[in-house]
Image 1: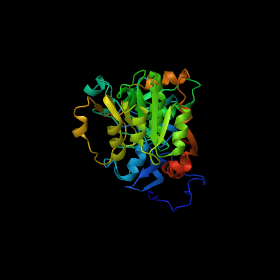
Image 2: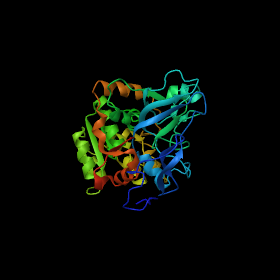
Image 3: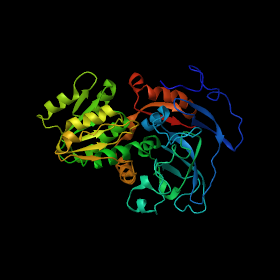
Image 4: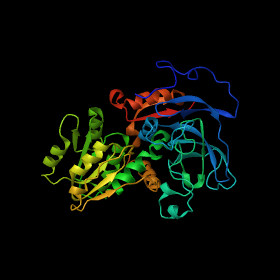
Length: 371
């Protein structure tokens, strides 16, 4: 259990008390080293470069990556950083070079910042943008705040269609493109494939939902959380395996006549789950890693070297966000299914407690709504 800065069991005084702050400050969730965070006053962001926009947060969420940050797994995140890289909001101000957006526009904030001009962006590898990539809530201040500055706004924001469910569209900031790009596309899921998704959290469920675009014959979900497995079953999993209660490798081998799966998607980010993927992949298959790994894992080349197995890694590029937005608009994809809990933005400390105890609280995604 991570240590909270505020006294356990007590709400922060800002939760219910009226706030008398000047227009140059805001409230934000701030990281203060492994296991430490607080909801505190920070300077309100301003335009720094002409390509920037300042967005007033309407809704945001907590990601599994944020939990990794809180554990100290992402050392590039330094003391004082505002956390968060997902959300929707209203543009408060734009720089002089922003041409696609204006004040008052409702937008989806991409977890990936892209200039659109560098060598990597021209390859569609926005995650490696030479002046961006995953920087929100990582290298610059993020979205678990009342306001956020978005660099390269023209390429890093998406307009929200009139009448759209903005709560559902928070899922397009990160988890849906992540599950789709890093898991399904990198894993080269094809019609008739047998796939296993190791990890039935929000990212694993996102991979489950988007893998169904390609009609796999079997989708096996593996987790130790019985509630999440049951949710996965309702979302289209054909088999569920509680790896805390039974031997997942043996069961998957039985289900596949000893062959293993065509695609193994790792959606947790710990050594044991990557090891499991190596044990269950069939010859000629794919291991698609999504998880954020804070510790070294063992690559078993002594068994894999002759198996024609492809192993892929990727940080989401969000190049599929426009496509996924169309599937949401057409109701082919319903990301609001992933939302299990709601909080006010100033209840973010409580939201972390809930999301960090997902099994006990039966949590998938939490939505934080600004006042």
